[in-house]
Amino acid sequence: MFRSASSPPKKQAVTPRQIRTRERADRGIPEATVARLPVYLRALHSLQDRGIATVSSEELATAAGVNSAKLRKDLSHLGSYGTRGVGYEVEYLVYQISRELGLTQDWVVAIIGVGNLGRALAGYGGFASRGFRVAGLLDADAGIVGAHICGLTVEHIDELETVIKDRGVSIAVIATPAGAAQVVCDRVVAAGVTSVLNFAPVVLTVPEGVDVRKVDLSIELQILAFHEQRKAGGPMGDQAEPEYEVLEGDGPSDGAQYIEAVDA
Amino acid sequence: MFRSASSPPKKQAVTPRQIRTRERADRGIPEATVARLPVYLRALHSLQDRGIATVSSEELATAAGVNSAKLRKDLSHLGSYGTRGVGYEVEYLVYQISRELGLTQDWVVAIIGVGNLGRALAGYGGFASRGFRVAGLLDADAGIVGAHICGLTVEHIDELETVIKDRGVSIAVIATPAGAAQVVCDRVVAAGVTSVLNFAPVVLTVPEGVDVRKVDLSIELQILAFHEQRKAGGPMGDQAEPEYEVLEGDGPSDGAQYIEAVDA
DNA sequence: GCGACTTTGTGCGTGTGTTCACAAAGGCTT
DNA sequence: AAGCCTTTGTGAACACACGCACAAAGTCGC
Image (tube, rainbow over all chains, first blue to last red; front, top):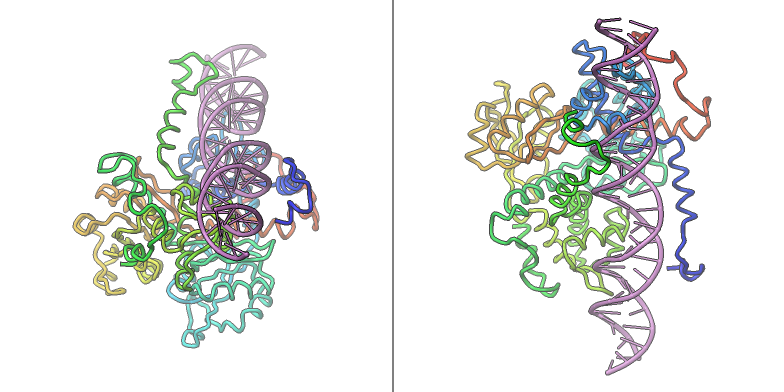
């Protein structure tokens, strides 16, 4: 829009890109690798429980469900923590990955929204086990406030800012209904939280520097449904149409009947 | 291993790759696009509720939290469903995306494991609302079997195969403890299920042709922790070390103390 | 009926992720 | 102590994804 008016419309707009790239590649571990480190860590813990002291990239990769070359490259981003001809020492690797992920310190978590899901989350063992401590349960419903759940007392949402600041909450888990999620998110961010885990089925908007991760059951189901449909009568070409393209009306002219098929 | 023994060790091993690629690029919508279609669909439903009949790629992209070019490219994989100079007709697009995702038919879901999480899932509105019908709740605990939850009676895990086959379950949701997940998974797959949504913190192994999607709270938290650590004292270089590499012992020799720091 | 304006659909350059394949490196055996 | 065997760490090729920028295409006003 205003770009073409204020600058000559040439082909090389490379300058702003490179700055951003340099900035991110700084000492950065690739995002895809970061997402897999917890999986490796879990597999390593399992090996530890079985008393295994050393593991090869091949074995660990199998346990983690990935390609062994990928695993080696991932680990190489943390440093050279393997011994050629032998493999990786489990305990040492556990420590290094834990350190890289920031699990050598405790993170304080608050759960906002204590419905079915919020209660399930509060009771989830995976929280307490490794570095995450739930320090607050908050809800807007006066009927739930005051209830005791998993050793915590549900507090009113009005206490949100106080709880976050006084207890040093750095990760907020949003388990509210969709309608409340953005408001709650804005409040936790304003109170200083920079990491949000969102279970509400909405796209949250946050300022730069705040991380949001989304867990969305219904999206996962829809993705599964897509592939399931493909398997049933899709590109395998076992059923009717070998090329199932649009067959009905050739444009958006009458739209009243489509919605029937969806909501019915 | 046996590759280098049976074939000359040249540099071009391109033939097997291309076959697989051709096969997958067949009529396929990119996986990244598939993962975003549910987000677009949700945004479109929201627009519908507000009585908006037409939307531009820019507006829809903003609502979905993505770049408008990406949105247009994603939608272009479904066909040319826009009108230049105008935008997209909401209802028509809802229909097309729903159809592509396989939401014009109903999918029968069974939830295995009725603990805190399983109960929360059973009551989750996102299930019933759009094309997913929970037709079974199963658990191994005799103390829970027979309970009524959200209009369903919890059945014993022994009924698993019967429930799946008689009710036409095509998606299994595994919400069991980690130890039971793989066994349950094997059983649902043997019973004919080809789509699994796994909430248990394990890597499930399934045969070719079966899709598994994973929802893992603890992994998400760990990813957040990683970024949070970076923000606090990482590459911003505000604290002590500007280059925080390994400082202690230079190799895996004594490993007994690392685990302390992690589990303590 | 025509021109100006808006918005789609996409070609293209770029960056990120994945995989193969192999040299370098270390331990183990003889 | 020398060579063999195993396994890491990584260079390079390939595949996927992203976003800019623009031509094509259609609408709306006059």
